[in-house]
Length: 329
Image 1: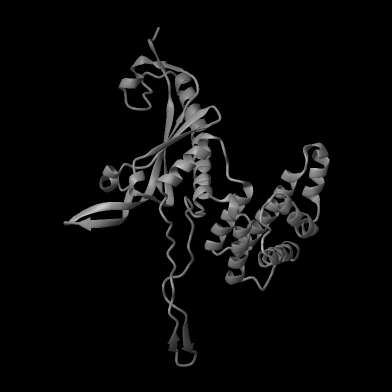
Image 2: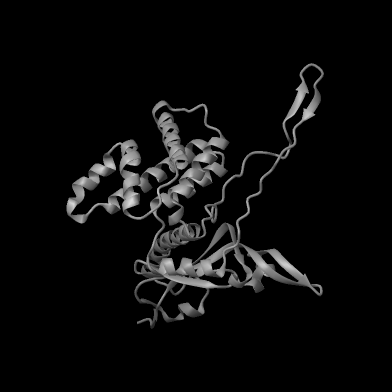
């Protein structure tokens, strides 16, 4: 009988992290939390690997006597370890061999390990998503971890050309906006880990607003409006549902969820906030929310809204951001 080694396994993945910056004191740090029956550890690259592995970019530093002192890094990827439940019996020599040692692994062993690797990859993605959504939630930075196109501009501005002579008479200056995220600080990192350890997740209306901001950045104004409108509506209904006494039952809560949002927003929502001791949003913000819902409804019911532009869309996103500001960070 082949001697067995009883192994406690964990999975390892390395994931890209677009638009993630941290203060220098966070480089190399780890945080841990649980995801169901799995223990998760996320580790930022060690600064000593910044040059050799191209995993950190030195963004900001101060220089003294010809020496650089790092202040901020851009993090290109993170390591993610996830525990595998149980103890697994494998041939004793497997720990002395290179990975995928098919010369000593049985067909059954191979099948078990392939299945474990596949299922652990799915768990790792869930853990990464939970972490990134929590980072956005606690820092208020919707673009962390998102890799999207920032537009199709080449840097050439709009030119006005005489059609007969094919001669340029005017060239517009082109402005290119480069997105930059402020670095995550030690205090924020601590708050992120505390939230993950408690099993807290961002409210769905926060996720929806940040999705709207992502679509706005990518130039998809219609999708940005839809997500922002749903974020606002979800938040308003949640505030009212949470204020209902428990004895009123689920049926009344369902009625609130299904009711037309306009009377709920204009009559019930302000009264609920006052009763809970929360500030009622200024009329200007609520007016923008009404306008947002109008645009959303016209797009979904008629298929278009010709007056939507970036300025108007940005105003809508700002209004929803102010509406739910107390729940971000």
